[in-house]
Image (cartoon, rainbow, N blue to C red; front, side, top):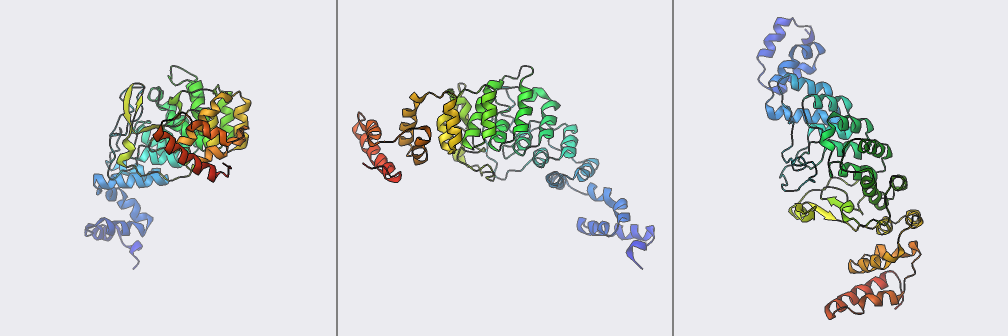
Length: 372
């Protein structure tokens, strides 16, 4: 006789003699009837560790039904992150004080990444913080913004707006959305910033996305930033800050998540406090455009009144860093490179710098094909 056609009493007897999850799961998989009979028991047999694994697995696939079953069986979802560095004060940036040995994502971050609104809504109802930071130093907002999920961004923002009112709360989501060209997401966040006491102003947000748009050649983002008040001559280094897990200016926007190491804990002074995990990029719009390498964006920055008196500083900085990409693209800005220009940087330097710079500049001139 087929197993499916057995009387309920016999099926219950078979089930009572099964000792493992695997065997019970195999029985459940044979028929929807058995699933209805034993699904709840299967989930209730899970340990807390197994529940956590199943919920994360389901969140990554948008399986809200599976998450509900785990919760019904008594599973708990972590509501707050272990770091809380960005929640200690409304204007505090994230802080890379701890690098977990075996970092795990959080279900809400995973659900936001794939854009699963049912999973996001269910987890928020369980009391999970919409601005939680998982062990990869990712937040649901950054994942949703970086993948262009406008509705998820809106849901997170307005679930508890106070969690996003601060000088650094929305910088990382703005940066990743700008780098990947997600204009609808940027418009949603800018709309949020216009209302109430958000601390991060629309103009400041525009300055942040201006650099990302230039570095990653997103013309639509650059034009939107300029429209919202970004200044091509602004020199505030705070707008060019980068957190260690985030994209660098030269990185592809599809680069996999980096593995954090102890060297990433390098500190920078941010608003008077020594903060680990941050670094400064060059706060110069023309430098960012040259680094991105898009001629049209270089011209756009010049058309908006960039101060050409700063070109010499850009060139000098590029020489010190031996950055041939920047130097070779200087003609994009109408700059004609000559040996005399480079000689100026050597003249007046002390003997040690003179020797180091001469070797570097000779190498650069050779690489860009400039005659002595």
